[in-house]
Length: 422
Image (cartoon, rainbow, N blue to C red; front, side):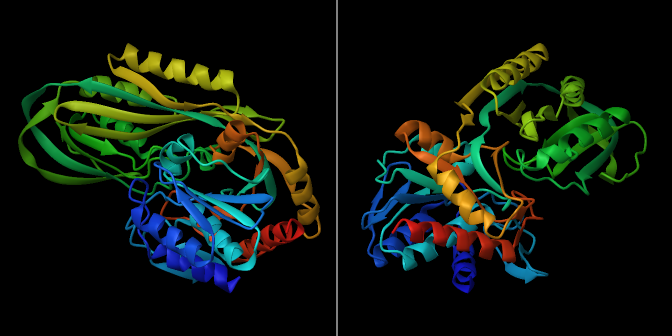
């Protein structure tokens, strides 16, 4: 256990935000070679490591969602949890990597796959060139120790653009900042219907009859928006509320966006969050996250991410969203479409279930409303897959925390499984 936490803290010292993973790639490459693994790295940055004659491949992604001060991560322990000071922690998927590093130290027959840029549309695994030796793959990118995952949501990115002109007006200029928003993972945390900083900012501006000078919000396409700020011209004084802090600048002339009303009406009309729920699996079935808003060079750009555990529902929410934005005169496109993984119970999940049940009566086989790389790998290579992981709360946010006792329990299960297949 201590070695795993030591491994994780070492990983936190190495910058590995999505798209900026070269230092982590080099570290993992060197570590694997030091442990006498044969290593190959493909053009997408996926790292394949193999030693002996393995029957199971462990897999995690080595990029992280950087929020707050990340990639500067100050890790600390608090009441049984790993946390980070003013940044995302990167337990998603750093804890999985840390467990794999310990497994590479302990076992002679092992295959490991470290994938790149998962957090930005499963980019690395979509371009995976490596052929796996093992017939089974255990993904370590789950956040609930009571579940063995054999299915996941598909997803699609959507972008919308609107050009605008400006005109000079005189009025009271305020700087607005979003406060008291939780953010979170747009698949895992969306079930709680957390408020969106972008939508609340739009509502405040609309209710107070403001005109937008500049407006931006959100952090990552797979994160529920926590931060937003705007420079807005009002005719009257405005006051801060629970979610929007108002700072008066001065009365002056400013160039306002002539598409302010269109943008505000769209943002307020857009249905953020859960669209349908699967009672059988007890998970969100379909959702969409209005993730990022930017205004620059007289263009408004909005990024969204839709998910569904049913293929037809994913296609439907994609079509509906494109149609909505086009109705508001935006140019819209979708890309990075990947279908859901509708897995089945198999030898690997059965064996994991037996190991889990020795200490965890709450364990169940389920699916998740998020993307998992093993779903893509299973389809590409006809390999038996499932996913497990320790309890991680509020991933993709500065409130992310990971339960230490859960890390110990999950690592023991991983090592017992590997021992059975040596």
